[in-house]
Image: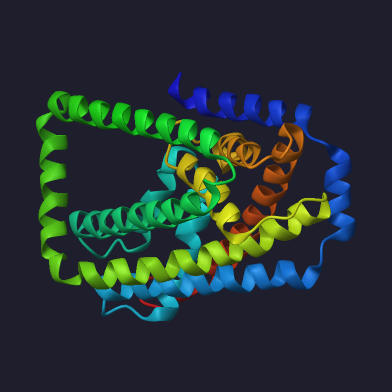
Amino acid sequence: MKRTLIPLLTILLIGAILLNLKWELIGDFLRKAKAHRILLAYALYLLSFVARALRWKITLPSESMKKLFRIVAIHTMANNIYPARTGELSFLYLLGEYPKGRLTSILLAARIADICCIALFFSAATLAVIPQRMKEIAAATGLALAFAAILAIAACMASRLAGTKIKGFLKDMAEGLADQKSALPQIFAVSALIWGIKYTSFYILAKEILATVGHQISFPQAVFGLSFSELTTVLPIHSIGGFGTFEAGWTGAFMILGVEKSTALTTGFIFHSVLLIFSVATGAVSYLIHKARGPSG
């Protein structure tokens, strides 16, 4: 049952998206988009991979930057394709020579830093956008806080109900995080750099997509909208390829910013499709190189 639920959900979500797309807007994008701006967004996207490899280098100093870059690319591709963040397991597989507890704690520290950075960028962007859309943003923020509270309650309940084995694994992760205490300032600093580069890349891409359909957005508006989409990727219902969940976050955010519903959905679908092309192209090439050179390469 569990094996069929996510594929079924994905099919339903993709079907819902395809039925509500404005296909003429996709044609407008294909005709009007400037190739050099798309390539600039991709170049910055790759630069964010370099920064992420640097973050792994802090906690895995014996590994080369080239190998870590390939692992970042493969890991990102896996997360973008596999549902419910199961792509995170690729990090443990690709660095199988290390203890799983250590790798899990490294990954957890990075994810905590990522969430903090998204929150900081989102908060700054929200402050810039609030004068224009105060009521809508206040409502959205209230819903987000309510959702966060529900997740916190669920996490506490899961912790109490968890078996001894799961509790032991969580304890190992906590100990691993404690071992990284001295490196946390560096991890957070590099994470801020990662998200600064990533949001700049996404802004260039989002601005180009929306411009082809007659909308102009500022950097704070792009950060505000994209943060919603990024947060949907951590949901347990995140579908295969992220189709549906990513578009839902994008559509809701850009509707708050005044973009008509079907236009927001279509531009979100275009952005998501281009981002998947970026990710799969880089990840596939990196996987072939990684496989050819072996774990020690």
